[in-house]
Length: 369
Image (cartoon, rainbow, N blue to C red; front, side):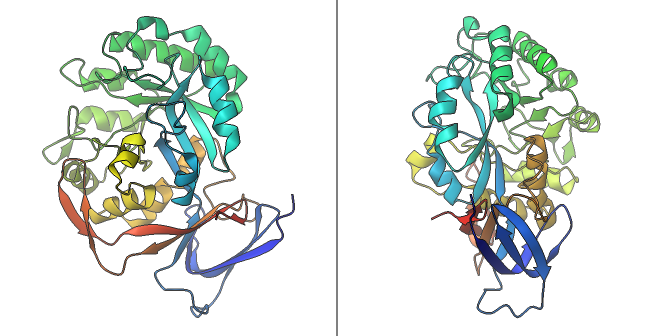
């Protein structure tokens, strides 16, 4: 389809891959970037608070309100600046066909799945591993082979809420078997340490596996005082990655501040957006979560990479997450508040900082209304 030629001009355009960071104009045609031209600061009426990034990528959220008890409408996610989203465990082998047909293929938002090791996905109010029969290795492998182009990982949430009955050790081992047979990484939710030590859990994870909820304070925490736990540092040295997964209870300012102060940054920043956020009527989107990371000392360039380039590579979408000639023309324009605002973590702690908000989103060169 020919989208025609469209030009996007901004006082600041940032590409985390190339390092481009300047005023400029992006030209787009037929769904792809045709040129990126730097020019002088005077660009007409564009505001100096304006920022254009590659389309934002939320590695960990929940999509599909009719299929997942946590799922939200993808259209709202798209309007918040997200052009590519990772559905975390919403579908399992037993309901993935319907999920693909009724969610993935019905939205302009690009969706990649971390398929749930549980057959039922997140379709039940009970924990997804409340019945041992829901863990079917062969069915999960078959579902991945059938839908490989849309699946990037296997979701294994060993928390006591998701996994009240199944032995978490057996659960992770089953997930690792699926991962080994399919060549995919694990997206892992940690078990509380009183049930199973963090060092033992992390020792089983491999290069490319992703631990989510990395700045949670309880029931598990990666810092002790102002130090990162040795087992966490060892896991990162082996190539295990760490995702934020803010959610309703998984982001603490003190933990984030301590970790960032130690130089331990999240590889990816994600919202863990779910239905509860919608029911609360409060804004919860990726630009807001990015703002919270900046408020506790994470540098802007690191934030941009963690919501574009790094998740694009993890999701196997190498022509996204960057502003390069030939790349898909997915763009997010953000504005920043003129003054600092109150920011709140999931434990009601407060910080103050300027806040980003999406004002324009382009998918393959076409503006999202």
